Image 1 (cartoon, rainbow, N blue to C red):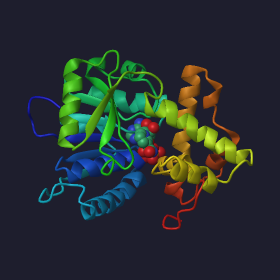
Image 2 (tube, rainbow, N blue to C red):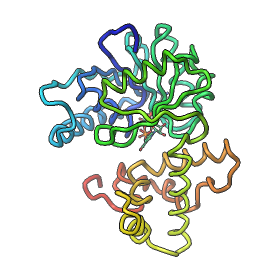
Image 3 (cartoon, helix red, strand yellow):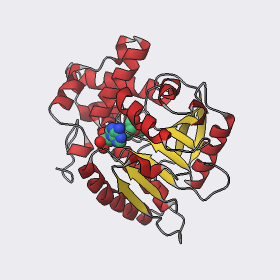
Length: 286
Ligand code: NAD
């Protein structure tokens, strides 16, 4: 964000996280221009954002009396030109992110904050694809963003102090608290989490335990709020496999090679909550 203007957010990608971030902003009184290359995804996003806003308000997630801000949906990336900050949240593939970041930053004024919500791709690698690398930082939002109010704020090697300050201001406007971390594949959370999900899936693949037993061990014995396989279903198994591929490619560590069961589930379209079936079933989506 720049110059004490009222924030206006551009969000690139209208999937699970882009809609969640848009709902968070709109409920916090920050208008959003939401961009996707897929028109039908934008139609689904409007419905999804309205549902998330209703749920979030029922749960008291936004300050009472703050009206919802405006939402514009478009396939034209140039519509983000007058945003005070842009959050990229497209598919976890370098080529998709490179295209989205390059086209958006070409129309932005210098000094406009650019954020990537990547799960695992180093920010310094993405910085090669933006118009001004100093304006880029990473913010790893959690899912759903209106419920989980802490994020990783990733300082890339070329992120400027002004960009980090602008990111802190944006997060304050969205009611989010940053944990400051350094750059590297998967940052803190996904370097650890994606590997545990892969191991949990491998345990099921090897017939050592059912998905229910794996998760019951984590929730019951360790007191985690969610087991690794329910977490994987919430993230989306396609995104898990993409994130593991990013981690494997950049670390060479075989522990990140997506196990056969994860790959098979993605191949069968069993992506988790978003398709109604993953390791568990979600009848409301089916
Ligand atoms: P998703 O598959 O649900 O949505 C991705 C969207 O990006 C799709 O609608 C696709 O059409 C769109 N897209 C692809 N290329 C584009 C482009 N060039 N311009 C505009 N839109 C484009 O994915 P998701 O789960 O929302 O993940 C998005 C990002 O957020 C990824 O980097 C992911 O790693 C990260 N992330 C995901 C989670 C999670 O729980 N799912 C949590 C934190 C971060």
